[in-house]
Length: 418
Image (cartoon, rainbow, N blue to C red; front, side, top):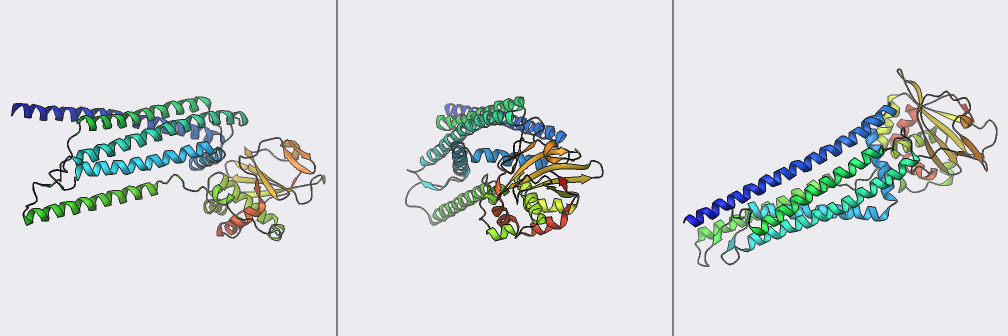
């Protein structure tokens, strides 16, 4: 009797130790997550100092769209991301099953009672393997992200929306590694505890059938318990699935949907007016920054946005090529230049103007634009992933209500000279 009491006390002590260690690791993982959030907020704050007319949500959306563009060009890294997401889904399902077995063990007979802890342990092990696999893939992706953004920084100065200071990139990678280590440690700890026997037996809710000659009441209770457990399992799986869908990381960004649009006819493109082109360019610019066209149309409707056409007064550009400058005006800042769009043939490119307040008197000379073979060729780098066929813009935006709202909200300013 004393030996049994000692064993029970020892098991309780082991369980408490595991809970404390798990709690410490969870706090460590939470701290790493907070540090990563603070680093992201630091980058956004830095960009707000430069891009004063943008909101934090716009900056975050633009940077997400930028990184998504980088990922789109790296097939292996995109594959790693998809595999990591798959492992996380498997881990969530396995963890849900393990929790259900632990607290709602199904009715079993005398011979099958030992299967309950085994099922629980296998589910915990599957969760751990899936989580550690997801962590390793995530850390590999994080390392690639730091190297890629470090190289990209060479093409952007500190005023660029996509610039990330090198110390921040280094700290982000460090804290991501610490977060991955904490998650892996929790996975290993719970797995070892399950197999060693440090976790309590999954007995609550279990109805054990002693032999085949059972009373009707026992049969009814057993059936009821099994039904309840089955219902709980189904509900748990359903809830897990619903939760995953609500946080689906494969949510399509505006620029992705735009790039899948079909091409409009040549006659539809030829019929576009300057007002049509300005509205299309405005919606495309915000799509590149991760903003839905309905929200971009709201910006235009709020007032303060205008466009100016750069006239080819020297007759050096190919017929049909156009340049438009887009501005935002406010009572406090006056007029600032957001971006300009250059149409070369059937394609358009977008270039940041970084909220410049410069008074434009000679567009080409002031912004370092050369004329090569009859086309405008800026020395500055275009906004990443911004070269688009105009025929696609027509299909993507022109039929939407957002296009009409944008067109009615924007005004045309005085023409500029090339």
